[in-house]
Amino acid sequence: MYDTILIAAALFDKGSSTRSMIEKAEDLVNPGGRVILVHVLDEIPKYAAAHVPRTHMSDHQRKVRDQLDQLAAGIKGAKAEVVVRSGTASVGILGTAREKKADLIMIASHKPGLSDYLIGSTAARVVRHAETSVLVLR
Image 1 (tube, helix red, strand yellow):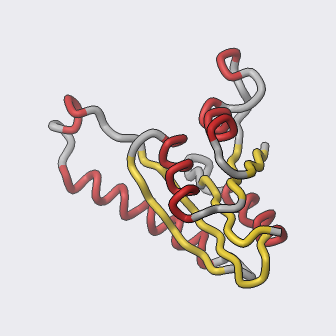
Image 2 (cartoon, rainbow, N blue to C red; image 1 turned 30 degrees about the vertical axis):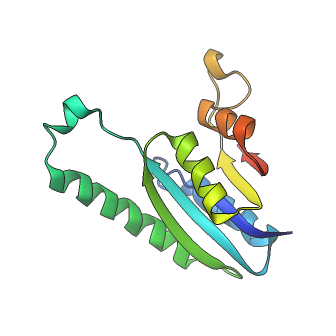
Image 3 (cartoon, rainbow, N blue to C red; image 1 turned 60 degrees about the vertical axis):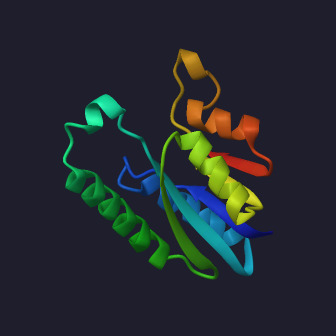
């Protein structure tokens, strides 16, 4: 059992992989523990950011936070937190895990291609560099 579980929340699949990770986390978290949903937004390169309205980025971040808040509201048996960061996915996930002192990181893996044969590239980097246990779900 774990006191703090960090879930790397993917929203591209309408949150279905995140929902299945939440269900597993509810079984693994200690009573009164925490489940943290983290989503890392890719940074837009500086040359492109100049052409994107600032309101577009803040609107997108707000929509992501709203989706995560809805998912977090359904978590049973644990305190839920939401973190939205910008940057490289693996760096943001690992940084949040360190900051929040997570006991377990849960991350989904897509069907791999040749470049990341066993698990997805973000999941592979998280597994390789994590300072705590990682549960990869497919």
